[in-house]
Image (cartoon, rainbow, N blue to C red; front, side, top):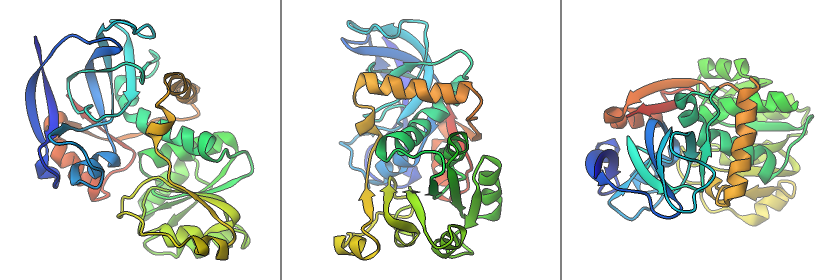
Length: 326
């Protein structure tokens, strides 16, 4: 038996609830593989799971994405083989580890031109942008999108992806420096929502019309303003709760504000199918490999520093992606 180090929680709590445990890892079963991980991604969903906002059966390992090398595969696994470089975003959690046995379906071959650090930093965030732009409400050149938290890992990928598509992306962020970062990555406009009424500014930027789509991972703090920034029949995509969960919605309000649409998608619904997941990953790798999207890694921590990494993420003290190095 080989031993692995994994970050787990025994009960919901703050960053102090995270602990490193050593355990044995065996051979992969049918439909599984064993991966030696070189880098692990950190995302806000990890905070939701650690805090108890998203329920897990405890104790449970954390982490939703990583990159590394396949050590062994079980029966029926044919799309990757031992020695292959791979990356993934996958449920259930367990990616905060140096070695892992897991289901193989959502593990994707990683092109040689993309580093392990980039692979770990891009899978969940890049696949999220893929489904936001192409699989929730397909957007096209000439459309206008309001994107909150645009200086984060998802946001910086979205700014570049929008530029590549010819989409006008209006970014929001919490500091002038973060606004500047979004503009550098392709946002057409940037709004500091701590000093400006972002909905009013959006109306001014769109000649009073409003945007076609809002993409909002902030949640409670931006929800009402996001609806006010939409054009009639516009789409609100709420895909995260960084400021807290959105309160119950009065559906009649959507009619009053212009027959608005609203959805609350999850990446893991989109990638549950093996073929769809592999196709989405290939599209993401093409965007990165072509240079249209670059992956900005703003912070690196050792796996043993995972609590510090969580504190920085929750304090909104990060830009771009954060990775953990086993």
